[in-house]
Length: 74
Length: 352
Image (cartoon, rainbow over all chains, first blue to last red; front, side):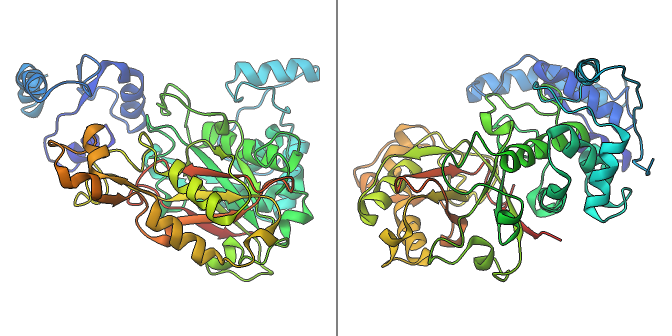
């Protein structure tokens, strides 16, 4: 969250993905850095046990949202 | 009242009501705190002999400046005595040193506590315990200085459990975790002297660590060191896990480790700290075969992997050896670090 917001503030489009167990932490960081509406992308927790193939499938599922956030269409 | 920066002021009618209000305000670690009245907090600021608005350090990722006043308020709540302030301030200054990277150990799922190790004359002056029940309970200075470090983390550094502190397991040291080295009761060079300070200086060394693991090996130095190396080489610590940080050439995270050795120092008369560290560095290790079986390293186990070993501690000086613990026995303990050195390194600061 910290890095995504700072990269965005530096003029470089960014997209930040968090798992849904981190919603309050992500919201807190966004508020702390003056970006309460920062468009965080959430995905189901956990991801640490996913196989390479499952992780790839998850990435493909999220890709359209990432593109939307990067082009500012949110 | 002296300038504390942003504060919350409330009125209390009784001590018990005040304690309950502190819970409601989210100022506690779960145990009751001493209500931080203006007079009490001022006593701590005066004992510090520093301006309350002086910034001790920052946690930039959370936009927090930690002032002497904030430390004083938390020291009061923790039950410290005002004369503990210089030690507490050194601990806070150390954990806010950029090298310590506090945002890591105070937020990570890996869950560490900040261990404070006090050296030098100040330990005896304020009554810190370095012997029986080293990690507690029973001694006010150890208990409350360690607790104040945690309250500073929670109240001033925003390391709030479930919010920015996402530790999965946590551990009891997160309530309090402060020890002193029995540095006048051993021929061994004290930790702070090894780290560049003089005998008459006092210091605090902070270390982001797991909980201590007691080792019941006694008798001969060789037997004790063999057991310490065995316990320190276990799978499942930060040091023996794979990870996305650290020296990626090694394949495992590695990390620093605190080793405490108790009892009578005479047992170690033929050993220097340097020799102990040398032995442990060479023997805290794990075979490539084990690391592959545990899926820490990728790939199939090859016949030669049983004889190939990876060191879990990068360098001998990454073993922080402390002579401390009860005189009853030469039992020891090990505390693996929370993260690899690149993510968090032990820091020592002088008590001023």
